Length: 214
Image (cartoon, rainbow, N blue to C red; front, side):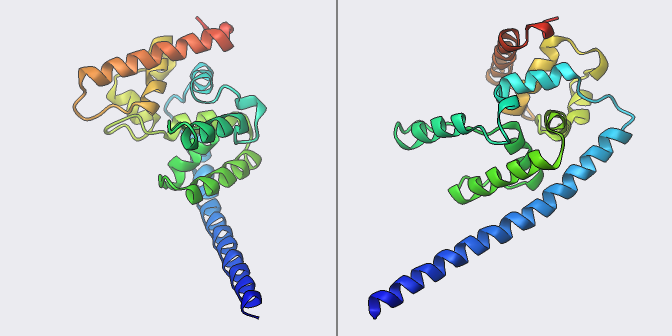
Protein backbone atom coordinates (compact mmCIF):
# COMPACT_ATOMS: atom_id res chain seq x y z
CA UNK A 1 0.00 0.00 0.00
CA UNK A 2 2.85 2.36 0.93
CA UNK A 3 4.68 1.48 -2.29
CA UNK A 4 1.54 2.13 -4.36
CA UNK A 5 0.99 5.49 -2.64
CA UNK A 6 4.61 6.43 -3.33
CA UNK A 7 4.19 5.65 -7.02
CA UNK A 8 1.03 7.75 -7.20
CA UNK A 9 2.80 10.62 -5.45
CA UNK A 10 5.74 10.46 -7.88
CA UNK A 11 3.32 10.41 -10.80
CA UNK A 12 1.53 13.45 -9.36
CA UNK A 13 4.75 15.44 -9.03
CA UNK A 14 5.87 14.44 -12.53
CA UNK A 15 2.55 15.53 -14.04
CA UNK A 16 2.69 18.78 -12.07
CA UNK A 17 6.18 19.50 -13.39
CA UNK A 18 5.12 18.83 -16.99
CA UNK A 19 2.08 21.07 -16.49
CA UNK A 20 4.29 23.88 -15.15
CA UNK A 21 6.63 23.56 -18.15
CA UNK A 22 3.66 23.71 -20.52
CA UNK A 23 2.38 26.88 -18.86
CA UNK A 24 5.86 28.43 -19.05
CA UNK A 25 6.17 27.63 -22.76
CA UNK A 26 2.69 29.01 -23.48
CA UNK A 27 3.42 32.22 -21.56
CA UNK A 28 6.79 32.76 -23.25
CA UNK A 29 5.39 31.89 -26.66
CA UNK A 30 2.72 34.60 -26.37
CA UNK A 31 5.42 37.11 -25.41
CA UNK A 32 7.71 35.94 -28.21
CA UNK A 33 4.97 36.07 -30.85
CA UNK A 34 4.09 39.66 -29.92
CA UNK A 35 7.77 40.64 -30.11
CA UNK A 36 8.20 39.00 -33.51
CA UNK A 37 5.15 40.80 -34.92
CA UNK A 38 6.48 44.09 -33.55
CA UNK A 39 9.93 43.54 -35.11
CA UNK A 40 8.45 42.70 -38.50
CA UNK A 41 6.38 45.89 -38.38
CA UNK A 42 9.47 47.90 -37.42
CA UNK A 43 11.46 46.52 -40.34
CA UNK A 44 8.64 46.98 -42.85
CA UNK A 45 8.02 50.59 -41.82
CA UNK A 46 11.57 51.63 -40.96
CA UNK A 47 13.09 54.60 -42.78
CA UNK A 48 16.56 53.29 -41.83
CA UNK A 49 18.53 50.77 -43.86
CA UNK A 50 18.17 47.15 -42.78
CA UNK A 51 20.92 44.47 -42.66
CA UNK A 52 21.94 43.28 -46.13
CA UNK A 53 21.45 39.75 -47.46
CA UNK A 54 25.24 39.34 -47.31
CA UNK A 55 25.24 40.21 -43.62
CA UNK A 56 22.50 37.63 -43.03
CA UNK A 57 24.71 35.08 -44.78
CA UNK A 58 27.67 36.11 -42.62
CA UNK A 59 25.55 35.48 -39.54
CA UNK A 60 24.52 32.05 -40.79
CA UNK A 61 28.06 30.85 -41.57
CA UNK A 62 29.27 32.23 -38.24
CA UNK A 63 26.58 30.96 -35.90
CA UNK A 64 24.47 28.32 -37.64
CA UNK A 65 25.99 26.84 -40.81
CA UNK A 66 23.37 24.04 -40.91
CA UNK A 67 20.63 26.67 -40.83
CA UNK A 68 18.91 25.38 -43.97
CA UNK A 69 18.90 21.78 -42.74
CA UNK A 70 17.22 21.95 -39.33
CA UNK A 71 13.87 22.99 -37.85
CA UNK A 72 15.12 25.58 -35.34
CA UNK A 73 17.32 23.19 -33.39
CA UNK A 74 20.58 21.70 -34.68
CA UNK A 75 20.50 18.18 -33.24
CA UNK A 76 24.06 17.42 -34.37
CA UNK A 77 25.44 20.49 -32.59
CA UNK A 78 23.23 19.80 -29.56
CA UNK A 79 24.46 16.22 -29.14
CA UNK A 80 28.09 17.31 -29.61
CA UNK A 81 27.68 20.09 -27.04
CA UNK A 82 26.10 17.70 -24.52
CA UNK A 83 28.93 15.20 -25.00
CA UNK A 84 31.65 17.82 -24.51
CA UNK A 85 29.86 19.51 -21.60
CA UNK A 86 28.91 16.46 -19.56
CA UNK A 87 31.59 13.92 -20.47
CA UNK A 88 34.63 15.97 -21.43
CA UNK A 89 33.99 18.83 -18.98
CA UNK A 90 34.38 21.39 -21.78
CA UNK A 91 31.21 23.54 -21.87
CA UNK A 92 30.12 24.27 -25.42
CA UNK A 93 27.10 26.06 -26.85
CA UNK A 94 24.80 24.72 -29.53
CA UNK A 95 22.36 27.58 -30.00
CA UNK A 96 20.93 28.14 -33.45
CA UNK A 97 20.02 31.62 -34.69
CA UNK A 98 16.37 30.86 -33.84
CA UNK A 99 17.38 29.96 -30.29
CA UNK A 100 19.49 33.12 -29.95
CA UNK A 101 16.63 35.25 -31.24
CA UNK A 102 14.29 33.55 -28.77
CA UNK A 103 16.68 34.24 -25.89
CA UNK A 104 17.07 37.89 -26.90
CA UNK A 105 13.34 38.57 -27.17
CA UNK A 106 12.28 36.70 -24.02
CA UNK A 107 15.17 38.21 -22.07
CA UNK A 108 15.76 34.94 -20.24
CA UNK A 109 19.43 33.99 -20.05
CA UNK A 110 19.21 31.43 -17.24
CA UNK A 111 21.75 28.64 -17.69
CA UNK A 112 19.59 25.76 -16.55
CA UNK A 113 18.47 22.58 -18.28
CA UNK A 114 14.84 23.56 -17.73
CA UNK A 115 15.36 26.91 -19.46
CA UNK A 116 17.26 25.31 -22.34
CA UNK A 117 14.41 22.87 -22.97
CA UNK A 118 11.90 25.75 -23.03
CA UNK A 119 14.19 27.68 -25.39
CA UNK A 120 14.39 24.70 -27.76
CA UNK A 121 10.59 24.34 -27.85
CA UNK A 122 10.15 28.08 -28.49
CA UNK A 123 12.72 28.01 -31.30
CA UNK A 124 10.82 25.19 -33.00
CA UNK A 125 7.54 27.13 -32.68
CA UNK A 126 9.24 30.26 -33.98
CA UNK A 127 10.55 28.47 -37.07
CA UNK A 128 7.02 27.27 -37.83
CA UNK A 129 5.45 30.68 -37.14
CA UNK A 130 7.45 32.82 -39.59
CA UNK A 131 9.31 32.26 -42.83
CA UNK A 132 12.66 30.79 -41.87
CA UNK A 133 14.68 33.15 -44.05
CA UNK A 134 13.43 36.07 -41.93
CA UNK A 135 15.05 34.77 -38.74
CA UNK A 136 18.64 35.98 -39.43
CA UNK A 137 17.35 39.42 -40.41
CA UNK A 138 15.23 39.70 -37.27
CA UNK A 139 18.13 38.68 -35.05
CA UNK A 140 20.51 41.15 -36.69
CA UNK A 141 17.88 43.86 -36.31
CA UNK A 142 17.37 43.41 -32.55
CA UNK A 143 20.67 41.84 -31.45
CA UNK A 144 22.94 43.27 -28.76
CA UNK A 145 26.23 44.55 -30.20
CA UNK A 146 27.63 46.28 -27.14
CA UNK A 147 27.30 49.31 -24.89
CA UNK A 148 24.52 51.59 -26.18
CA UNK A 149 24.18 49.28 -29.19
CA UNK A 150 20.96 47.43 -28.36
CA UNK A 151 19.99 46.92 -31.99
CA UNK A 152 21.29 47.23 -35.55
CA UNK A 153 20.43 50.90 -35.98
CA UNK A 154 22.11 51.93 -32.72
CA UNK A 155 25.20 49.88 -33.58
CA UNK A 156 25.55 51.54 -36.98
CA UNK A 157 25.12 54.99 -35.50
CA UNK A 158 27.63 54.43 -32.70
CA UNK A 159 30.23 52.85 -35.00
CA UNK A 160 29.65 55.39 -37.78
CA UNK A 161 28.67 52.71 -40.27
CA UNK A 162 26.41 53.22 -43.27
CA UNK A 163 24.29 50.07 -43.71
CA UNK A 164 23.90 50.50 -47.47
CA UNK A 165 27.64 50.82 -48.12
CA UNK A 166 29.37 48.66 -45.51
CA UNK A 167 32.39 46.68 -46.61
CA UNK A 168 32.64 42.93 -46.10
CA UNK A 169 35.00 43.31 -43.14
CA UNK A 170 32.74 45.94 -41.52
CA UNK A 171 29.74 43.62 -41.77
CA UNK A 172 31.76 40.66 -40.47
CA UNK A 173 33.08 42.61 -37.49
CA UNK A 174 29.58 43.85 -36.71
CA UNK A 175 28.35 40.23 -36.68
CA UNK A 176 31.38 39.39 -34.51
CA UNK A 177 30.10 41.81 -31.87
CA UNK A 178 27.10 39.57 -31.29
CA UNK A 179 29.57 37.09 -29.79
CA UNK A 180 31.94 39.69 -28.35
CA UNK A 181 29.84 42.78 -27.49
CA UNK A 182 31.79 46.03 -27.45
CA UNK A 183 32.13 47.40 -23.89
CA UNK A 184 31.80 51.04 -22.90
CA UNK A 185 35.56 51.34 -22.66
CA UNK A 186 36.95 49.35 -25.54
CA UNK A 187 40.28 47.68 -24.83
CA UNK A 188 42.92 46.19 -27.08
CA UNK A 189 42.09 42.61 -26.11
CA UNK A 190 38.43 43.01 -27.12
CA UNK A 191 39.41 44.77 -30.36
CA UNK A 192 41.66 41.81 -31.23
CA UNK A 193 38.85 39.34 -30.47
CA UNK A 194 36.42 41.24 -32.70
CA UNK A 195 38.92 41.46 -35.56
CA UNK A 196 39.90 37.78 -35.24
CA UNK A 197 36.24 36.76 -35.18
CA UNK A 198 35.55 38.94 -38.21
CA UNK A 199 38.36 37.30 -40.18
CA UNK A 200 37.14 33.87 -39.10
CA UNK A 201 33.61 34.68 -40.33
CA UNK A 202 34.94 35.83 -43.72
CA UNK A 203 36.93 32.61 -44.03
CA UNK A 204 33.76 30.64 -43.29
CA UNK A 205 31.89 32.70 -45.85
CA UNK A 206 34.45 31.84 -48.51
CA UNK A 207 34.12 28.18 -47.56
CA UNK A 208 30.31 27.95 -47.59
CA UNK A 209 29.19 30.82 -49.86
CA UNK A 210 32.00 31.85 -52.20
CA UNK A 211 29.59 33.96 -54.31
CA UNK A 212 29.46 36.48 -51.44
CA UNK A 213 33.21 37.07 -51.27
CA UNK A 214 33.11 40.48 -52.95
